[in-house]
Length: 387
Image (cartoon, rainbow, N blue to C red; front, top):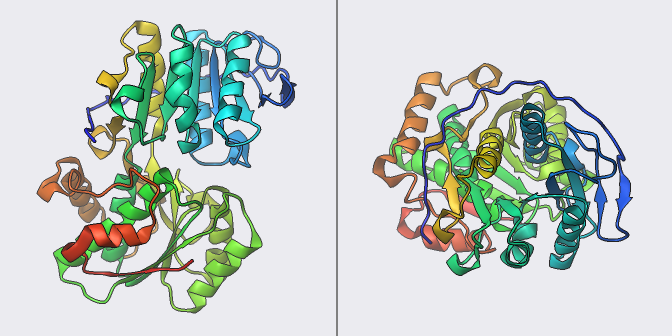
């Protein structure tokens, strides 16, 4: 699949949100969806909000996930406050296509001119709904798998380089000296696998480059996006079994993994946002700055430059400053240096030895065995998939 990558300039953000929490958690149209609080305006239960953020049902923590959902919502709220618009959020009843479409319908009935969906859960709805509402602008973020003829003229299908942030974390894990690594993911879906696959390829790249042998990565799908005792118990058992560091990309389940790491005084890598404050042993986090993405796409809608990228998914990552690790001052590395990090992120952004364009990404929901097969002779580490 062709991917277009361009450099997006970083925007200075002015944090001057005026919150008008009206109709919070009120029912919106029966079973179609649940409306959240409006911001930067005066409407009730979503009525009159011009920009609607649609959250998948499986995001148990809603807009307060301390990760990508909160990142998007904060950026949307800030942008709306700065530009005199009203935004609100809705959460679907379930993750079916129909539930997403019903929620879009509800938001549009309530006055939405912009529908902002996120996650692969919105993929099927975004394949059809924009065609039904040609006067509404649609945004999908982190929904990958569109065919070119499925992206309507009024849809911007954006994918960030999560795998690039994860690649940097994998390289850093090797640079820190870890050889027994673990990954706990929430679901076997492409956006989550981007974290997993990118991390493995970063570990593999650094091991091959530095001539390090005997690195093992074990991986597990928790099949849950919430904090739960089973995920915490698994992480604790892994640390007892010799795993030196766990990369967590389990959404709300990250809290369980970080709790296990804290109790064991063992390192953990976070995902989506800087999670350093969530635990004393969070060494770094795989950060994707969706603030810039959100500001840029909302601005384009209102300045007339919004388009569907020629019917192609629009990819942004390290080259645009979107994909990176936590700010260096919040990292807790002992061996991996800032100079090494600067060299590695430059190699990724500049695509040295095709470390970016040559990266294998999960366009389909396939498991870790498919990655091993695709990497073939290039695989110099050992991957253990633990069900």
